Image (cartoon, rainbow, N blue to C red; front, side, top):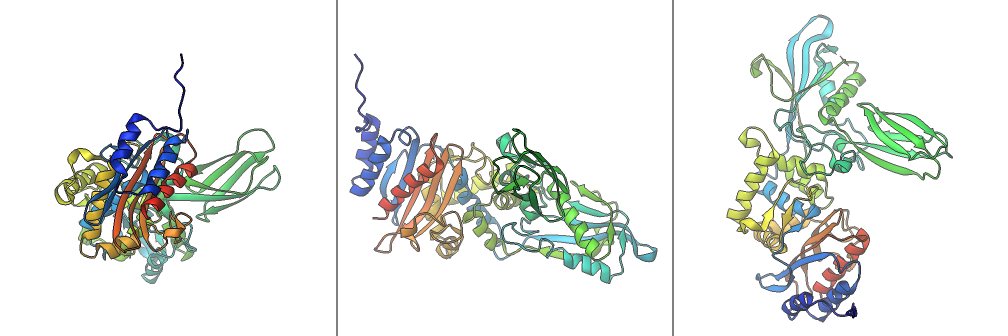
Length: 475
């Protein structure tokens, strides 16, 4: 005889969890959780959350000590270690100098060297910057003022500050062509992205607008049944091939696989505007200067905005590139900035200064793109309480975190909590999360971390379920 299915009754395990979690949480949260458990799609996922008041008392929890994949909620921990190790008012500098000696007729017998140290802002953010070369033009202007008309050895980008590993060890291979999984090096330009706006004109050749604007589009489209594909086919070229049939206007974000060369190429464009010839770009991984550094000629120092300002891009906008470059910089004092070195520095900080249990987290990169980033909901809440309670912590973090109705990942979510909620979102395949704090009507903060793993439903449905939990917590 088959046992009848009773979807309106939670499992025994769920009953135990709800009995533990809900007396302090209120009827609204109990009702929301029961509906989630009864949903055939949502109920099959693994849910973990922890909710704590301002005194550290647990209000509600479920699987709060279960290690969960983080998605971009991992960036909370990245921002914390960056804020701990870096001077938040300090910029990231790229030193620029001439190497070699002056020749006749404005020829410089050597190279223009840009010594990169992890600035993610050169070239701006593709979505907001209208002049990609605004930070590089002063370099070209200064060379022209000094009478330089050509550079025999072109432009050199020195990326010795960072390790040679540019791709996270557990990043999914099919993400690597997309800008959100762009390589991480000491140098970057235009967020290490090439952005193509494809505007169809029937099934023939489309109009293709590319950023940076000196990247050309080679169009090989037709009216066949071949799927449309856009790929980076060279430093200054993308290829659009396949059928335009039934294709709508689309914006495609490609990862720039050679970020240091892209920066050097942009420098060449800025030089050309001033009539200065630089025919080549070279990348140095380890400094190979034969001359002592004092024999070089300083030209400029290109500086990012203060590091503290960049953490808003990490947390509110959830930029993987900013997160990874800033995270790698944490270990640069060891000689070469690396993922491994920064993970070691971070582990020491989280266990000894924040007080997290060593087994309650395991991180693999700085952005959350790797599915091997794991943490418990309880430890996430402990981190949130730690950073908010630090001197100046509340003001800084509430400026960095996403807020309902403002620019960032919560712009269209949880609008009833505008002005009361400050949080970090997280999403990768099969994973969703939200963690932060909110203010109840009495004004006291409530800290929370919610993770959903192994879901097989639409991301929007999971986000809406998470939002219902947060709204219930706010009651």
